[in-house]
Image 1 (tube, rainbow, N blue to C red):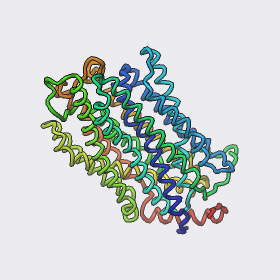
Image 2: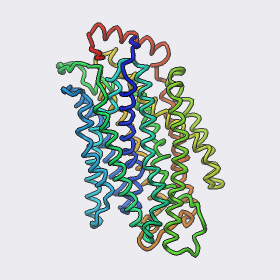
Image 3: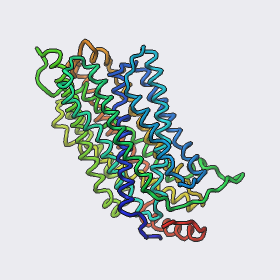
Image 4: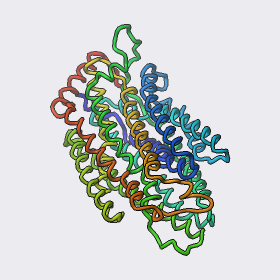
Length: 496
């Protein structure tokens, strides 16, 4: 089995920085767009539900289609890299347009929001699929590939935290600068500032990776032969890959910790001075400061739990099978979520919940790294069994899982709004801004369950497919040895 090292420190860092920038852009959308549509633009919840679910389902379908397109042709500049440049500027433009808050009628605003949201998702797919397919072609060494994925996912996670920092800083500083008594206009300004900053910095870092990354594993373009299995057929017949995809779908609830945190901050907790007797301006400042603080508490838990796990992943992945890591950490996250739920039910004390929320975030970091590495192993398995390696299509499966998971998570948030009867226009408008303490306790706990009950159940379910996953231990070693021999026989080119 090939054990040479191919990736220099400079190239490794450049790819990681690109992932950091990409993480900033994606987090700006995934963590805040539901709050922006529901509470700031105050679009009808049913419209937001249908838009989020259907558009992201379409995004999820786009990933495999994009993967097939990429796998068909290799350009002079590579198979994956050119898309990084092609997609950068359009992504930036549509990210800003997403948070522009144009002065339109409700009907026109819904049409505008739907068009921008759908186009953004399609352009992002054009950049996301080839970018995360690059580790497959940067090195043929599975250990080096796993190490690269671990390092890159850490930086991608750091990038996703940048909008969270902006949310906190702007939430604490902007009200005093603007002297805002209008909570609605304040939130529009805040989100636009966040979007512009994220686009300028994030895209500069992302596009930079194009100039420093090299594609080394050159799989020759092969024209389809009549009667042979199609690319999609090979993917669906790869049992290990189907198990990894199923694991990802069942773990969709884990996205709630980040996606629903801002909603929980608005409608489950208030941290600050009593609001009675405050002026409108002071009330806006106090409530927005509370929202920023509570949101930050959840983000710090995610950073410590998720990034802490990701930092240890290279070591854990060398010593333990991926399936064992997933099973153990997901079960631990489930147990932690039980304690979080019980504490919330009896006390609604956020500070007591913090240690358990932190532990429940550990599987987020594990799954963010391990699933990418497992998909690469599944592609090795498919190449060994069929002689074909559909790198982009295989990696697109992870994009499919991520987007489907986000669709389910976001839809769950909107459904919760409708189920417990929260009306954003009564909570946040030009005339009034209400705190979480103005809601009934059952409404507050129901919103809190999005970051306690839902992720816990999801983590328990996602561990089940791993009991049937076989690419581990001696089986994995034999597979890699056989694949190395097969590649040598087929004359697969590895560029230094």
